[in-house]
Length: 388
Image (cartoon, rainbow, N blue to C red; front, side, top):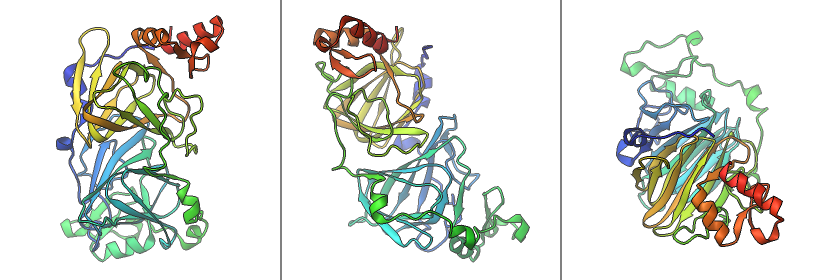
């Protein structure tokens, strides 16, 4: 595994702190519709599905997925549309009602912190239904480097036209109120035909609930990482989508449908850490609770960045890193590229310290008490842990 080292300036460009986030309120065709005009769209990693050429993209580098966010005051709605690739919502603040179906006839409400993955090729929309005047916040993970954009419900496209908004065949916004000419029918994105809408899949609320993981449904594991039992460490993990970096041989992700990425919770106790390791895949951290300190590099000068709550951190493939909670417990969502299980390489000092306590990895890379293994299996597990 070729090592990637980061300079201090390079590490800072991987951090998207709250003050680095730039919203766009003209990102979509429904941006002027009553009840939708106050929503703000963010594109942190990749363009996502924005339809505005003015959208600020913090990190345009391809990751295999896109990361963004939506901020909406109480009562504001994102109207019905469909996606071609995975769309996962990570609810950071507020209570949200998700609607789906050709008429938005089905609904599911979720409150922070929760994660829901809405299937592709169905119409969906969402509304901030918080009990208080909360400016709700949801992160989004979208599958692929090029999402292909979205298709809006025909009713939304018709309503937007009354406000002078159209879409080009390339799915970009045309705003006639800003001086653009009214496009001809041939110059517009056509609405999805009714016959094609009738062919779209149907999901009951009970079925859709299987694609959601609430705060109470998180299945935390205290032994998901090799270093978890070391003094001053103590990380816990809870899977959500796919097989990520967990080393618990009984890990059971509640959502296993292919997304092109995995999603899992990491919780660090106050001043606890996840020790030095690296991963072959690019990863993104979203800080949901507390503050996270990320230290890059192993050989040579270490570089540290501090990520407060609501920050996004892009961690390059093959870079050494360690995480430490600051100012109390810290909860982070880790998104890792790829559908398959991911293996991490640990610093030799961590592997040795775990072995002193009688722990290691089995030949399949899962955490085990070394005394249970024959010597040949112990050596195979150590090679996996250190990538020797």
